[in-house]
Image (cartoon, rainbow, N blue to C red; front, top):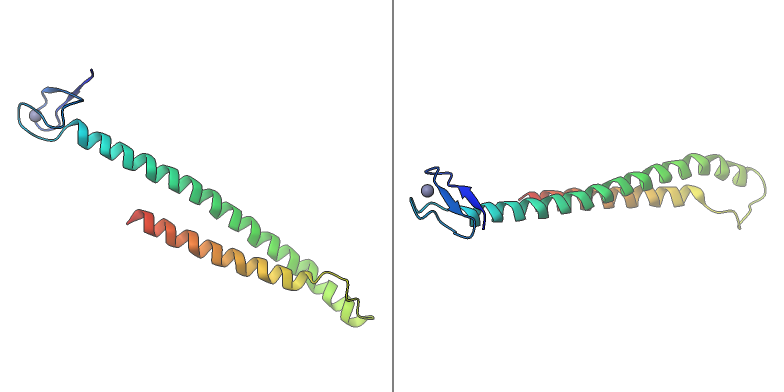
Length: 115
Ligand SMILES: [Zn+2]
């Protein structure tokens, strides 16, 4: 059984007690609750940070596809049309758009968790 100091009167109180027997102020229960909330918040922010990073990677990949896809598109339209060539330009466009939507969803959920 651990003892904690009461934040109100400074007397040592058991961590099992939800309130101080001396002054009646809330002690351990309140502290544990705060800790629990903090752990949950850290956990969600960690996973959201990871997702935010992934959406950034998707965005960069999309930009790369567009950069590669533009001259590819010119080459195809300039010469005979090769229908089997991958349309990197539109793929890149969808990747950039998808990463934007994803990023917005992450932003909203971060805002939601902070409320
Ligand atoms: Zn007290």
